Every structure is written in C-alpha cells, then in structure tokens.
Image (cartoon, rainbow, N blue to C red; front, side, top):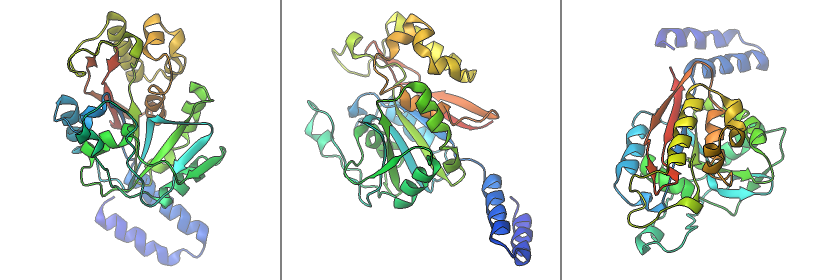
Length: 294
C-alpha cells in the first residue's frame, strides 16, 4: 500500500461508526500487506545446528529473502502427541532429544521467547479441533537446529504445533489449511522434517552429510519435487499408493507430515522454490522449499 493511500484510508476511519466497519478496514489492511512466505526445511542430522556446511548455509541464505516475522509457528517431526497441542509458555526450554553426539551440541540453548498471543491465535485458527495449550514441551531439535541458523539472535517469538500421531495424512492437510489466516498476521510457518527419511536403508559410515542416495530415494526425491511443483496435493496425501519409491521414503509419517503442512498453505498464485536439494546417507533428503508470491 502506498503512503498516500494509507493516509486516505486512515482518514476514512473518522467516518467508521461501527465495530464491523473497523474490522473490515483491518481485514483490508491485512490483505494488502500480503502473506508471509512458508518454509519446509529438511533438517537432517542435529549436527547441522553447529556445523557450517552447505545445508546450514542454505538456511541462512533463505532467511535473508524473508520479511521479518511477527512470530514463528514451527511444526517439527519430533513432537508427536495424542491430540493437538501448541506451546504456550513464555520461556520455552531447549530440548536435546538425541544421544551419542558431541557435548558442544548439548551445550546449545536457543533462547527465543514463546508467544501466548500466537498460541491463542493458533488455537482460534483451529477452532474446529480441540487444541491444548502446552506448558511443558519447549523447542525440540527439529525446531532449534534450524532456527539457530535462520534467526541466530533468537529475538523472534516461537511457538511449536504438535503432530497428532493418531490421524492420517489427509487430516493433517486439512488442519494445516486452517492455519492460512496466520500468514496474514505476519506469522512465518515452518515445517521441519525430511521428505525422504528411512533409517532402515541408511548408510551412516563417515559423515552423515556425504551426498549419496539409493536409486529409490533419488526417484522419490524427484517425484516429490514434481508433485509439489504441480500442486498435486492428492498424490502427495496418498503418496504410498503413488509408487514403491514413495512408499519407501516414509515408513513412518513423522518426518513427512511437516512438508504436508507447508504445501497445504500454498495459494494457487504462489510459487515454490527448492533449495538444499540433496540426498545424504542413502535414504535422507535434505530438500527444502519456500512458498511465496510469484
């Protein structure tokens, strides 16, 4: 909105005598302000939190392309619950939900504040679903290992949304669509997982981040990118019926669902940009994406 148009709009406030008129004005400003982009991050190894590698550099690079959020809502593969919850504490703790890594990784503390405002806004956006306000969780490594590079000063409030493990992919897609209202309020929504994530076929000798993918994993990564680019959400929801490669890509849904939350928020006139497009350890895809205006 141009400055002159804004001043004319503000001047019009003097003629607004009802709350309904003011709400329409407020909604109009939100629409003209545009939508915050959406991210899906392939987070991979927790070591990416403290390593300066191609993937952490990719996260820092994409952060430079984003408008400053009012707050961040993160959907991490590592918070599965029975039912749906959002973190609502003022000072979330850093959760080191892993083992066998160097002490330097356990020393990391991501001290971003929480946001009771965003917790309540998320609950309201998902009004058709019971949403619990959680005071116990915090930031798991699916969130902080990525946020540490996107927003290293930890100044932007962050809330996590849990994944209800009792629900199927179509349920999560529909739930995610209801979060679109938050994009109008300056909220950056981030899904953090891996679209190809299968430990059974992983080859973990040497560096976890060595580029290598089994043939089926390469096929799955390319198929996912094609389906996402074409906005073929039906195939993405029913991915296990699409091909054997896609069935192998996610034997459990935890790391796949955060990507579903991202693509569910895409509008028809928005583009998808892929980055960090690589396979590591045979059966993990670091491929990430940004959704924003074309």
